[in-house]
Amino acid sequence: MNSNKMFFLFILIFSTLISISSNSWMGCWIGLEINLLSFIPLISNSNNLLTSEASLKYFLTQAIASINFLFAILIKLIMLKNFNMNFMLTILINSSMMMKMGSAPFHFWYPNIIEGLSWLNCFILMTWQKITPMILLSYYLNKNFLMYIMIMNSIIGAIGGINQTSLRKLLTFSSINNLGWMMSSILISENMWMMYFFLYSFFTSIMCFMFYIMNIYFINQLFIFNINYMLKFLILINFFSLGGLPPFLGFFPKWIIINFLMMKKFYIISFIFIMMSLITLFFYIRIIFSCILFNYLKLKWLKINIKNNFFIIILLSSLISTLGMIISTMFFI
Image (cartoon, rainbow, N blue to C red; front, top):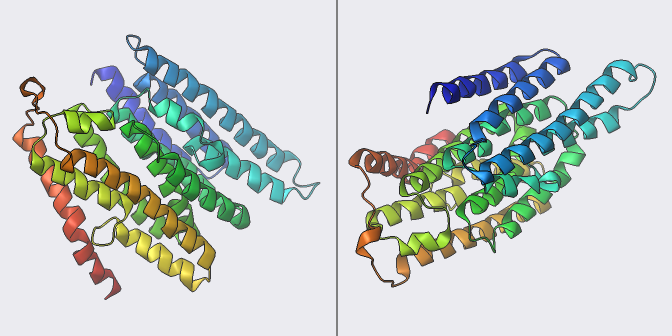
């Protein structure tokens, strides 16, 4: 991390704060533009063609979303006094926000760009870059439109990850699947969204951190590399927690969302959500099978030495995700 990267990282953080604390749509748009222009220098690297391509693609898609958003704002300011265009405006603003965060109908740029990024940039794009569009979406949402998008996110996120061999793409489709849950949590309350987003970011950060340390980008590397069995077990725990398997902490926010959906009598949506979560768990379990149960040749020169500090951090985070579910039941008391 050099001084330039640190500078752009600070701008990235402050641009999000500008957007979510702004009291006008134009202020929100300015915050989004600063965010875009600070993230591009973070991801671009002149020595790597993949990152240069990813930064150009990211700029183009975000610029199109920003144009749509600005167009909707200007119509809202000028024409709404004369015409009743409220329904169209909500859909236009919602769509531009969904394009910003890589939500289902506008998700095609998302896996392609992530494939060219480092693990740190992947983590930023999968977590921090979703905060602004999500909060702006909650300010001006169309409930019926959002219902269809939630279902679409859940289905595409689950089915898209089945044939993936790249771990970055796999986490991307998992992120799209989780977007459906996040949107449903926004319909419940902002506090619910904050809790879900915090836990999702926590599990994603663990996975990105582990793969960054081990320098692993594809599934086959997990069973070619000579990783110690304890570390493989921790990968298993964190994957299950990210998928939302009941004994682990990742299930807790999903459990609350399902409760609320059932109370509001959204039985079909909750059924689709649960079924699609099972599909995501299927491809997580497939990775774990490859990683732990297969017999393979151990090559001495591919041995990974992980420092004790890193190992302790991973161990503690895995303990939180395992024991967290037991502690979180206190919430209902």
